[in-house]
Image 1 (tube, rainbow, N blue to C red):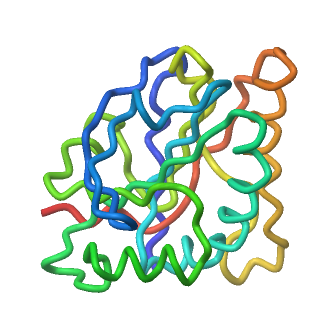
Image 2 (cartoon, rainbow, N blue to C red):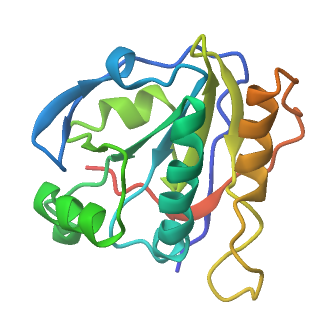
Length: 184
């Protein structure tokens, strides 16, 4: 299991726009229509990565906890589905159903969105404030498959809570660690 860190896009970056297929309901979703009133979490995930499988339940719970507070979550898979068929749009839809994702799970077939976000791994998390300005990028928490640390989502939750409390998000942020994005 390769461990690739996130690239840590510069804080203050404006969220790159996108228009991608939501595999859950076969609609096109763009950032402007999917963003949250108070903030937006963009997460690069996929179906087959053990690091993502390790946190899927927490991602589902986190979305349910924060959507009512005006923070929307958007998941994107940019993996090459030809070489990794388990990451195909059809399998993404089933994965979203199986994990009770209440957020869009978008397919970035051209990988242009992953490149625009400088995404490197799955999972890779980006938190934008209500103005779509990057305030957090990095890990969900310190848990990794096999390290014995329970999945809590504490790092991401702290950033989201700070946004909701109109407090600055700490600039001390740890990169996410996961499988590399499977580039074409």
